[in-house]
Image (cartoon, rainbow, N blue to C red; front, side, top):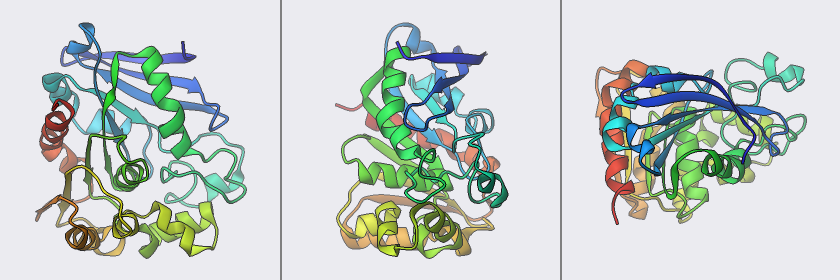
Length: 283
């Protein structure tokens, strides 16, 4: 049994929203995550959907703001909301580098550059360690797993699904950073975590991964037209172009009046959970 400490639990739409912590061997520090168990979990294991949050967020942000529990309850989906980076690492630079790098800005990759290489192992935590923790403690169907994300988390959802073919039956994103090696957020993160060799950045760039042959299940992406980061950081047209050229199925929906925040996510989260439920329940 995994060493998991429950920090708090709340009744929600017939199920339970909990927040938990465990000592991570990959990160070398305690890591926190949320789990929503729908009412169907009382009868047996349910499909699992990872929900990756964006810059400045933590394990509670998506769970509190997105309004996803009501739809997860309807479909019988377990929702997992991981934290966005290690905390209290003892690295002064992690807290002094600005809101878009360091603490709360892990970019869902394993850092190779010091001083971040020791603790910034978000990819290994999510892909190698957390699944075993969840399977040992919660009623989840480990072979029916989906992933979605917002902004930096949208980048994470796309790149992790592309880097681990077959691990996720369903994928979606809200306002993802589509081509991070081409925009300031990604350039800052990749240089800080991976170093100056820009060829290594392509391994964590959704557009580059699709262009070199990576494939996903049918992809749903929602983007707000009033998003203040649309042109400078997100570049959905680059994802659209890469998918069209490669034959990757993509439904890219543009919503004229919506910005980058959680009011946007809450407006369309039901569609995303419908999308995931259809693929996770199929077959």
